[in-house]
Image (cartoon, rainbow, N blue to C red; front, side, top):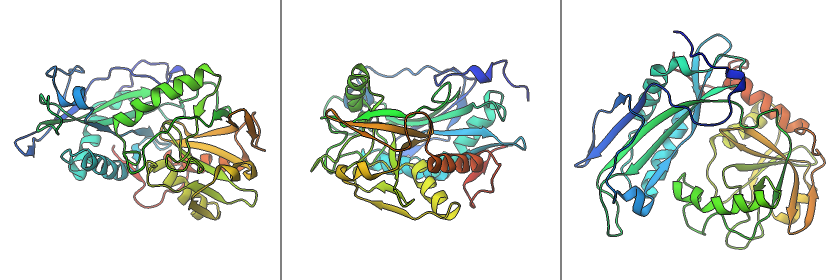
Length: 341
């Protein structure tokens, strides 16, 4: 295996075409066997359901090179499970969860030269996605679907180090009550594009959305779950039916309790309680934890005691422990680290 001639340390978080991608098709009520292909381009009918009615769901995970030289990925079974839940909600056929993991293995092995080396700070981002592909003009589900996985090497989400973010409480809702906020559907992210660009134009890094029904409880951002550390050292995370069940967040809660001995609470968090918090972070696959230093609620600033210079001490311990598990430096719970080669 000869690694690609890439300056791994200078990689940004963007797309780069790699050698192979995985494709499987659903037709006449069944999935075909799937295969690795060379062509990164997709040709679909102009009236394909994915274009007309946004019938598409996706996942995101990473492959890493561990300290002992193995290529692994982190908890892919949970990505397979979440994709299945997303597909059911959008009336799409479920791609079998065991086949999902096999497909991830195949595409990573086929692109092993693109997996960044240990210590480079870079990883191989894996993007599985599922879409309705046949022509549909009436409002109804497609009858034919395509499941694909692309991979691309990426650098750290925040180049130059993680600096605490300034986020705002927007007037927009991320999801509707009883809507699709708890699945990973492309349409959720399309809805977040205007609010995030509006936030950027006003000098904020992200939006911190409130619950869409009462607009009094913290929910999540446009692309990440939220965690807080209280004054008495508890890890607290919002509980809601319209929050995406982040694999990173669930893993951090386990690490907090089992590795760091913290009390963990998943509950409703009123906005009025946030000024009493010590630390705040956004968590997800891309950055693991992005610290928040300031929350602005319509001109009223809530400044976290952890400050604007660096990640707070408790979040730093959580980050170091979880990334240590992912990279093979710290012993992982059973089933968390899936060895590919």
